Picture (tube, rainbow, N blue to C red):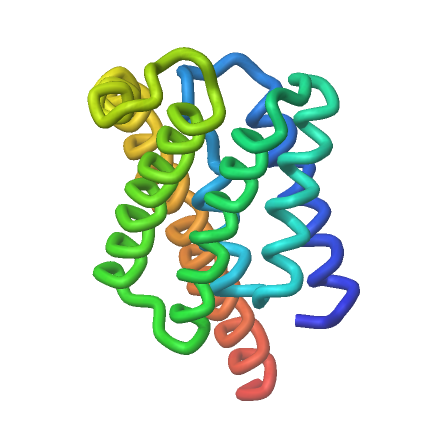
Length: 180
């Protein structure tokens, strides 16, 4: 992929990510984790980290910023799939993609709800408060997990389907024209 194609694809992913955060959707059902995983696996760390950060920052301009330690935990948690995607640069198997998706979702749940407990005022700063924070977040975790699985499957599946179809078309078109 040329540098121009990388930049265009990156911009398209940012625009799509921003739109997906701004349009109505169930709580925590967004493609951000899948975006980081996909972009890192195909475009590399530098592009994927910028894609995720820009998607978050631009959409947060409209959605609003909030308590910075909690917001920082969200931004950092969305970098986890970017790191996991690096391990898929050379080998993208369904099992590795699924494990990375589930791991990213679980780490996001643990880190962000710990931050809400630690830096927020909703829960007492005790073990009971921490457990309550995690318990109350289970419905959101379910949504983020379902969204992460859906969007990861969509991104990786659509891209691989596109590659297979375009390679098949390319080979049949050019192999056929040379045989004439």
